[in-house]
Image (cartoon, rainbow over all chains, first blue to last red; front, side, top):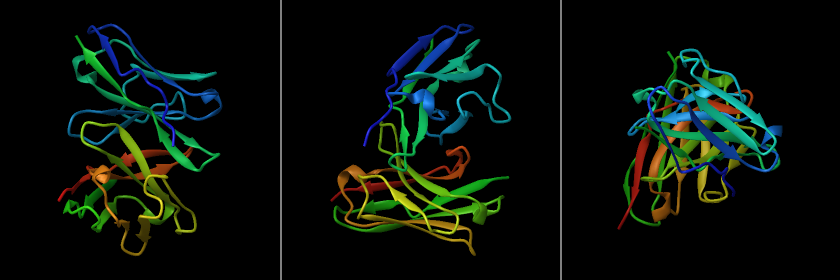
Amino acid sequence: SYVLTQPPSVSVAPGQTATITCGDNNIGSKSVHWYQQKPGQAPVLVVYDDTDRPSGIPERFSGSNSGNTATLTISRVEAGDEADYYCLVWDTTIDHYVFGTGTKVTVL
Amino acid sequence: EVQMLESGGGLVKPGGSLRLSCAASGFPFTNYNMNWVRQAPGKGLEWVSCISRSSDFIYYADSVKGRFTISRDNARNLLYLQMNSLRADDMAVYYCAREVQPNHLDYWGQGTLLTVSS
């Protein structure tokens, strides 16, 4: 099975913008979903269907998806955003979910 | 409130078997496909298996196909994962998760830990 490519780590100062990418051939043709996972906790959905936010997720979290790269953007980063982030797609050619490799966001 | 509570994890010897359960509440269980996802210690998320609402569609990751069996009891709002021929690389926290459209997992349980060791 394959995984989606994410950068292992992203470091960002408070108040700045964190950008996390998720790469795959023609990922723009798929719906991409993003999860935040803090240590010892279950993943939490922060963006679904490329750009939508579940209720309760701050507007600071946004997503985009085009070509070979999907992106999760966290604006005005706060200390509480420090976590691991994973992208997810459903691959219709193999009827499998595929997760990204995960990105650790560190707030400096 | 949507809730899912996994149970059944524990210590198993290589080659052994174990059955995980996930008790769902706060939503109409029969209306949703359900999934198992696992996370090995210090590693990323790995999808394991999916079962449709009425169990007519079932999918497995290649890493567990032929060894794991997903099932559900809609009358009791329960999801199961029967795991046989367990290996060291099956050791992980196992999460159950609810599936919604367009194909993603919106709510997750807190997970149950499987340890495989002699």
